[in-house]
Length: 113
Length: 116
Image (cartoon, rainbow over all chains, first blue to last red):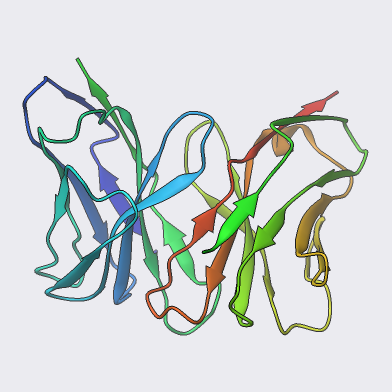
């Protein structure tokens, strides 16, 4: 079955370290998104990519970086410049065929230790 | 700018009863879509229902219906015959079709607890 795989499910980061969250999809979707979720808040857009080799900043891109070298993959790096990285991170992709065709991964919970 | 407001941080309902989760939105784009997602404690986002701004009828999907009042800019989710498995966080979200990149803007969510 097609879907989005995020790994790892849980990630612990020491202060000052960069960490990379994986997001892979086999849905053949062009558009992919990274969202951050904090307790008691909704999801906020970090980065998005509409096509391979292209990506744009979302609402809260500071301290994050992404790449889109393959259609299937959209990894997110949380850099040491991100002052408060502890959060739940969700990756999503979007079908261009249906208006409601968003698929979400199961998320990565990042904790700074 | 797009904005979604969910004013109910938490809601309680008795099993088998109906419950309404509120959502109001703000956008200047005449073409938009409204979504409801369910997020259980495991964290995945489960799509429930969609309403386009030009859809004439309110959307329904099984026990879920969307009470779309365009003039009031509200898109409330109605869950009929609540089940214990409905206990979760519920998010209202919106996409403006005037922007091409498909960003979803989310509300802050409502935690629904279904009592036996």
